Amino acid sequence: MKVKVKFFAMLRERAGTGEAVIDIEAGATIGALWEALKKNYPKLAPVETRLLYAVNQNYVKADHALKENDEVAFIPPVSGG
Amino acid sequence: MKVKVKFFAMLRERAGTGEAVIDIEAGATIGALWEALKKNYPKLAPVETRLLYAVNQNYVKADHALKENDEVAFIPPVSGG
Amino acid sequence: MFRVTREPIDLQELVRHVTDPEAGAIATFIGTTRNHNEGRKVIALDYDAYPEMAERELRRIGAEAMKKWKIAHVAITHRVGPVALTEASVVIAVSAAHRDDAFQACRYAIEEIKKTVPIWKKEVFEGGEIWIGTQTGQPLPGR
Amino acid sequence: MFRVTREPIDLQELVRHVTDPEAGAIATFIGTTRNHNEGRKVIALDYDAYPEMAERELRRIGAEAMKKWKIAHVAITHRVGPVALTEASVVIAVSAAHRDDAFQACRYAIEEIKKTVPIWKKEVFEGGEIWIGTQTGQPLPGR
Image (tube, rainbow over the protein chains, first blue to last red):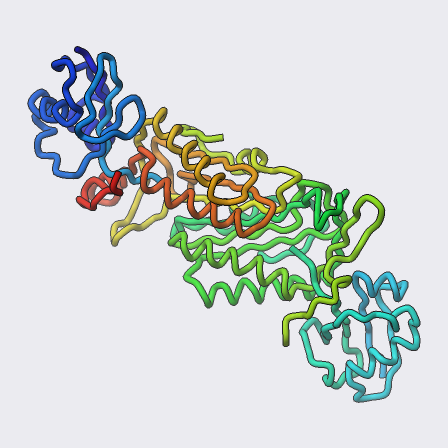
């Protein structure tokens, strides 16, 4: 299945893009997607900061199972304000 | 000696004026001036609210002795804001 | 900037006045005329003041806030005369390097204004008018 | 009104938005770009955001503030993109019948924004740039 991945801030710079469509096995968790992404985008691999996960603009846990066409985002520690 | 008296809010309405020059014996306290004013302005007599006293724009106590040309004000409970 | 004025208050002017590249936080408080008070339907407020002394007291409050918290600037303007519903009667702006100081000093300023600044609010309501504060016989802050 | 924008923030517009004849108190918070941070001389800030989710989170914060305090309206705007020194990156305005509620809800909103809203600040300083938050390895709020 295909999901849309969004990268922001440091991740955007390391991935070299703000958005990608990724093919992943049906039912994969968002945590598994991150592991897959680190192979597609090697510069993401050294990211040591803790990430939060969002699907369709809501925070979810790492074991959240993805669905076709989900909008997935990896959220580094926020620093707005 | 002469002092300048200022009336505000409810006192202004009761005195019928915002300002008056009052002749009072030298060295009179501001408390004594208030007693004298109640005779000059009978409508001030029934004022039961607590008043603060100010001389030359600083709060003072009732026993503060006045000097020639002082600017004296009687301050009803404030309600700005 | 500590001011008593008969004109509408320009919030943006106060904020500009306290803006400082050293200070990343600005807290403001705006007191506006409300359409009800203690069960009365308020039509307008009309403020009287002892303007010279009120400005002096506002300045004193600003100086005390500077002593109590690490703030950069304070600006306070109080309007007098008639103030229509929803218009601002008082605006306070405080800037600080850190937001905690800005919030606390702003809060302090409005509390102090209500205690010591010689300004009086007459409430014009349906069926009458009343000088707020003076009618209640409430004790004044000790001095 | 909960908005993420690339344009300068219009404080007066937010205040107008929360102004209400039922509410006599408006508290605002303005976060501005400061010229120093942790010993670094800051030249500018540059914010990245996940705009749709950030607006959703701002709305959630506003709704939670409405539950926690007796407030009339909340408006929050966060700017993204480059923000020059002394310009506002975030403005919050809260109106309430009573000032205590307005102050507390305003304070709550800025604390929450810094915790959960997907917006990231890049600090451009003399000699480099850094994404604030991500470099520190500090733990995130538990979810």
